[in-house]
Image 1 (tube, each protein chain N blue to C red):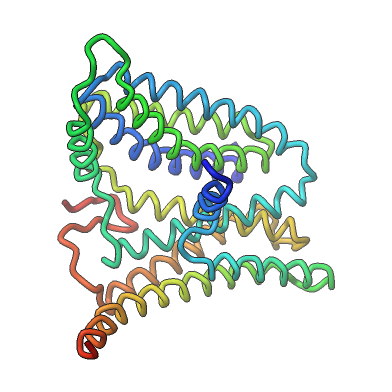
Image 2 (spheres, chains in turn purple, orange; image 1 turned 60 degrees about the horizontal axis):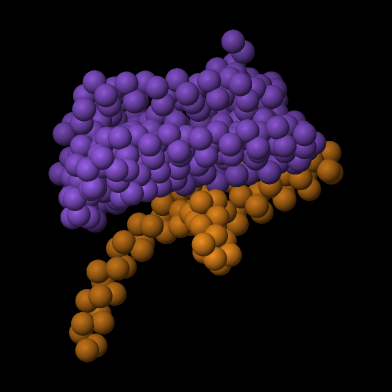
Length: 260
Length: 79
């Protein structure tokens, strides 16, 4: 597998895993509290809607001129990447609360319990709608990344297969654990995805605008390393000069260990 | 969903809560295209812009958080 293809696979896998964890939390909360059958029906419906979207947009994007596609898609990836990177750094420095899947699970579970008892033997509209909405919204961002990465490198199949693998891994972990995946180092994953999106976004959009990268595809590695290092230094600096309020729990930005 | 809400959702999806960074990316891409058209070396523009935009965005957030309580205290004193 070539360097850019490997980079594509890693970026898509990480982004899909993060979004799948968030979607899984919602589905688990609704399923455990009200109706597994209706929650899973919502998941299936959202998966079909997303598949239709990818199927409709993917081939259309491949037909566009490559330089225009790289310019537009690269710019969008860069915007996404900056958002992910900024939020991950702010979370690390204590300026934003860390995403707590256990807390999110409890909140969703209480809301589901308050919504009234589901009718026996019939499809529970609440479970279906909440699962559908959660999976569709989280999946839309992933679908966008799959389509744009795949179309840009003409590897839609690889991007889709990687996304499917990430979702399958998270779903399997959720089924085995039967509870929210609270120990996933989500902020570190989001930081990694932010770096990858910024790197691919810069690379493609500059190419689309007519620039030539020294070393061609090899410069992607320097972009990834450079952005990761700069982001890490900014995060350390922001944390050193003091957060507005200390956060009780922290997870390492670059390391694998999660302190909870 | 109305068209207004759909447009707001797309704006939130693409731009997020930092429109200055989005504007900065557009300007940097324009500069890259202009330099490339002039046969100059255009590749350094985006990496530099990304680092600068990220640093500025974090600085804005820090100042916003710091000025929030101070502004609230000043308003309490005035009232």
